[in-house]
Image 1 (cartoon, rainbow, N blue to C red):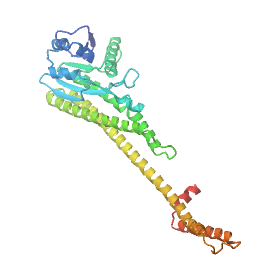
Image 2: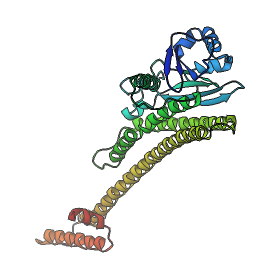
Image 3: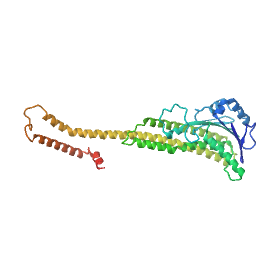
Image 4: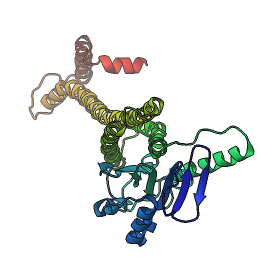
Length: 368
């Protein structure tokens, strides 16, 4: 477990769990799921010794539950926020999920939707974070705080450190939500490629499994964002109700602005996921409409051909009957008269079809 003492003018890493919270600033206790699961009792005792607050068993179980959805709960002494963040490795790509989905043909852009929970235990003067072994957001925030400390020691200007556990938690949440915003461009590009493939008349679309998997993943993102938004709404209500009117007005406003910014970002991701779902459905409907139109054109062409050959087939059938005396049978010009009659019939039918505009689309295609 990593422990940091954060005050207005310095960030100090602690070598071990302190026996009490320092008089100035607040504590940030950062730990991984594996460390908590290894000895939950010892970890809870260490947190209680450092903060003076006892963590209840249900919340302790939720903190190490890797499948827990986004959630908010509060007690008299602390509040718990579970937020599902993108599970990214050091290269910024999604880690392999434990789900039995390796056989599914998920496109590269959608494989980044693997998520893992991060648990925040918000106390009056301490923040406890429980996350996966590799969390780029936590690591980046930690390094940034330490860099600010070194810059202050060097005498140069540095950004302001968080002044409360609430502000630190909101900074972390904002960074996690921004990862979802970064997914909009690759997801849109993937959907655009599918749209072009669905509407291509030369190459039939056969990647229906990947398209179905994409809809499943987008639906997961939709539900994920809804859970995140509900959790943030409850967190906002908790922070508003817990702020004393005599509290610093600027600090209160800044906190509410950060919460509203996080909720607005989640709403943007939710709306984008819903738009992508609607885009996929529209592209599929247009695809089948184009297929139906293409089939209709083919059937119309076959119908015209059948109508042209029907009288010709009738004439050849008549002259093929086994009678001794038939007109034009013994006439030297009978063959050419019959062929001329067939040609006239075809010309008349083509003229009739053209007047009725049965061949209008084919004529336009020919002109192009």
